[in-house]
Image 1 (cartoon, one colour):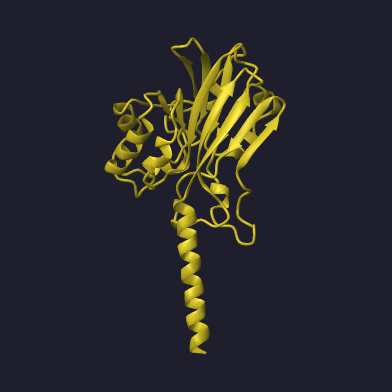
Image 2: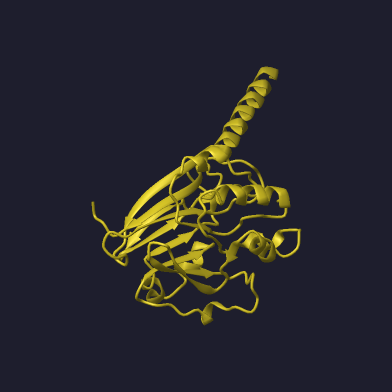
Length: 257
């Protein structure tokens, strides 16, 4: 029976090695979206990443991206394992394009052990959006609104019910947990051109295709594009199976061609 035990140990070792590879093998997903809220010949390039947790960003993945107008971090930028040094290094990589960086909190960001995460990010020119709207005007004249919903109340004096939108410009909603968006009423859905979320990791480890959450990906409905990212890092174990470690470069354009 020793040979059977040896075989099972070898098989288990191979599986764990493969799962570690899946957790550390980056997928840079590129998506072009026709957005009728933009004026003719307007284009906005957005980089979205969520659920970094304690993982170090692989510089080469991000070096392959040339043009970024806006960076949005969709929550779980850190967790209780993340050091100040790791966070600084990750944000340095995300700062390489010179684009403004906005952060919408996730459930694990409260675990950070080095004081106020919001204050720390502010010192690195990263703006936190917590149950509020951020109106952004770019050098090329494009104007957008980014709404960050934060049911974890990173900013305790802001409430989601206080947020008021507008209908005359491109509107992006970022909320860490996609089920928060699903629970919004239909009128709330219709306000946005683009919805960005994460949180689920796609289930992170799926056995024969089954996992605690559905796979991430894009959906289009009623002129709105929605993304549930499977995230860049991992929680608990640094392993994946049947899911991708991913980040997203999104081109929003008014041009059909």
